[in-house]
Length: 433
Image (tube, rainbow, N blue to C red; front, side, top):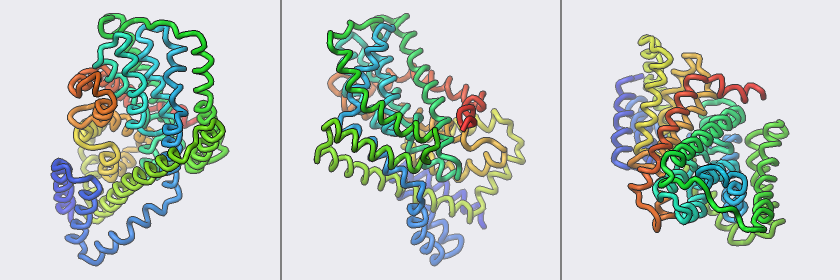
């Protein structure tokens, strides 16, 4: 073992990431080079040869393409299109009702997609033009959707939570259930921000919108029924323990295809586009995960994980100090890395420390996903912001969107503080299973 080699490897990895080298390639190259320096070329080639199969052959990971297929079919078949209209019917009388409706529509979309980017893109196309037309300042209209999209990774099915559960070897179902509470708290905090802005700055967020036209209520309810049926099917069965989180992905994908066919929205184009996006997204996620698995082996061989664990124990850090270090690291990584890479790069270092400190890995999984999603709206690489810019370029600039997300970032920090201060609140629902 050579702890020094481990530190060199981590340093080189950070440099490569700052140079914008793809995360998977950076992880694989550093891990391979590190193992060569530690034990020689033949063991390194053996790890490079065996790791992809050993990792991808995991039965649990089959949930990833299934949930992705579920989300892509629902999106391309238009099953999610009625969420915003239905939310408007219920929430239109509230101050800032359109923006609040968009946040809850994002929450509903999250229950079938598991992707922040998909949430932001889908709701941005629908809600931003309508909010701007109603008198909302473009920056806050776009900011509310960019922030609302982050709920996509908190409310299950969350791809980030599945990957976390695999790497942390903990219950994906329990992480899912813990994420529901934080996802709903996040949505409520965003709504509180919108209400406050509407009350104190009606020039930014108009307090009211016009009542819907006659006949709108019935059509909105009918449009949202398929997606509600899908949510009940998947999560009712999951939380009633009729099937596991892995099996829920297959049930959800099949249910989405059947519902799309029954409602006559399933076309050859929908199937081909959904399958193509599922395959490409799964491939990109898995190659990053394979690189992270190799990086874990490299850190284990170097002894760096054990060294850091011993250092934390010797430093006698308090709970607050340890959490402050974790939060700052994830917030910093979020400014230049996408969430999957940031999570998988850090878990090999953090997980042994947390286990040694006796902290719940279920709770930590929810906290990590929340911190990573904050990175989706922080400059300079806030992916949700750039997605919104692409779908709403006629209404808002990138700088305006970053300005619009600032109030929601403050709400996110409050949610993070509450999550750290009251871990039992996150673990309450998982404890009922």
